[in-house]
Image: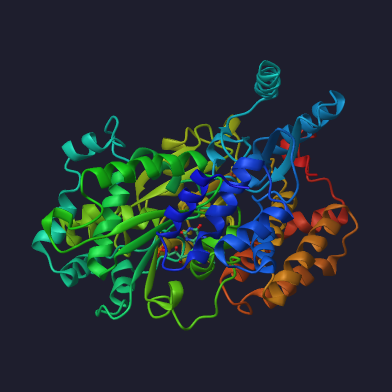
Length: 158
Length: 428
Ligand SMILES: Cc1cc2nc3c(=O)[nH]c(=O)nc-3n(C[C@H](O)[C@H](O)[C@H](O)COP(=O)(O)O)c2cc1C
Ligand code: FES
């Protein structure tokens, strides 16, 4: 599941804590970055690596919303609709993207999700993509551009 | 206006620029010229209060840590920053990370801590990278690590990345999350200073709180205490969002009138409209009416007097067209989603409040529902392990108290004369 290099990284992280179990969140992050989500197999693997029972790993993985318990599209669009974003059109934006993805049949490439405040309230409305980059001060035109850019970037890869 | 954290210095996030502007001098002074207790005394004198929401005096908190070294001691820096409307700590990671690192090291020295964890919400991918870069640079220059400034003092700083859970900002949930567990708050007492991370003495402080420390050591606690409102001195990083022309983070002295922030710094209310409601410190702080906004000063003591609080200084401004029922639904939906589920009043109560509010909004509400909402909120407040219960209950109680007419009108289906294309209306 993980390469020697990744295992080495985990061992380094373990050394930050007096108890190796504390490396569980960092380990789940490494797995998710690599595979995009955390499968049952991955949870069992993580448990074996850190001597934590599988049930406990499952309990942790399901507690935290950022850990995907099933695969997402290549681009996971996380649109904030909390108060500050809502006041600036977060819901319209969400609906616009949702409709657009449906009408263009691109739901396998993109997964859209409504998320809670991402700490970017002054640049609302906004979204995060794949738990990484923030896209702020969004408008419909900007979203069109961003989605088009993602679409093209996958074409280049193929 | 005095600036302590977000100074106007180009490229201050770079270590050489920080150094050439007096950076890491406070650390040197502390470890070479002061005893740990003297550092704590100076922080007590400054009357610095926690910026994480509870306004607890920082010097006093530090003095609760045991003096001996029988057990390892820990510091947790709280960068979970998940309270809706709060986005200030991220600004520190981006613009002045070394001042935060320097403050962390001084705190470690004062309390005899050898390991500090910086807990940052997982969504702050970019800011985790920025802070990690700053930490690496500080290690390279010998500010972090073994024998700092050639003294016996050594300390390490590690980032621990969260994974999407508001409750992990609560200090005991945060410690469980670092230990690799679900983010469940712990029953207190025992308090963290006695029984924290892995059962050892631990102190938890907000990122902004810690970032004030170098200034206090450099210029003295008395000087810091003289800035802003006497009972809550210093500056605050006000994060202003919602219906203003220039939303953003503004570092201003405590005690500044709210309307000065809105009009002079944020360019006034969007489209020149009137204010309807302002949340002064993140969604868990009770809201203010337009009349209250006109005179209120932004410090904890002034806000407490009118039943609210400074919280995280996340100011959310709403104009006259705002649908208050919809806003309260959205806030309650957040707490319903984020309740950790340990305590029945909170887990079930948040669901009941949300369902009642939705019923009212859909025009199926009854007049008794309004009092029932308050009743449910009262049954959450004070009946939970941690302060999440209050965070969820207070907005409901106080929004109804101050804007009851809006709720009654929705039930009676009176037209509130909100513009038809009000952007706030499109709640899913
Ligand atoms: C539900 C809940 C969420 C919290 N979230 C945060 C947070 O994101 N950041 C923070 O610094 N404090 C948060 N706090 C407050 C912390 O428990 C703690 O009081 C604070 O970090 C202490 O730091 P300070 O004394 O420097 O303010 C939260 C508290 C509760 C009850
Ligand atoms: S409300 Fe959307 S980022 Fe804060």
